Length: 136
Length: 106
Image (cartoon, rainbow over all chains, first blue to last red):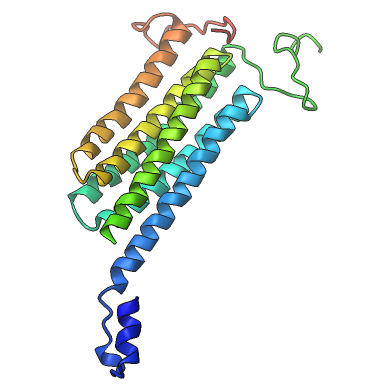
């Protein structure tokens, strides 16, 4: 950016200003923004998996945020790689993660529900999972 | 600018490693089997992301192939372990399998 300002202050006309440093700046800025937005979601989901009180809430934290965070990180890497073979491979990785991550989350949730694992209900106090069905 | 992007990617890889270590914490202290399976699945997703970012850091494009393979293997492994703990065998035909209800405790 300092190159541009130096050229402008030297009295050149607008057509002679050197814009060659601007495109990498925009590309790298978009890439870093996307990667760190994805890292925010990934770290938030991991913190949720560690701290939330119940299996199904942990599943929600991991399944929701990992899909969006992975796609954002791969999008940032795709912007950084430019049009090349690498971008195609990253697109394939993103496509497979976009397909398989919600499917695996749903499979785990379905298996846990079929095995009799009850979600935590009520007002922040965790009932015993074996007592929920006996009340009615 | 090149060095700056390399350091930014290195920082992203470092935070992904921290996230993987926290996921190992849930894997070790998860009360039920399904918590551990969720931790393993999410750990695999973060491994794929770490491989993709780290092969930008070291500037070798081979790692993305391994990441692609690992993302497929992770999904297959999760489904296989889920099927094993639901039917107590891997060669059960899903047409005549019955659902076992043995609770969620590992």
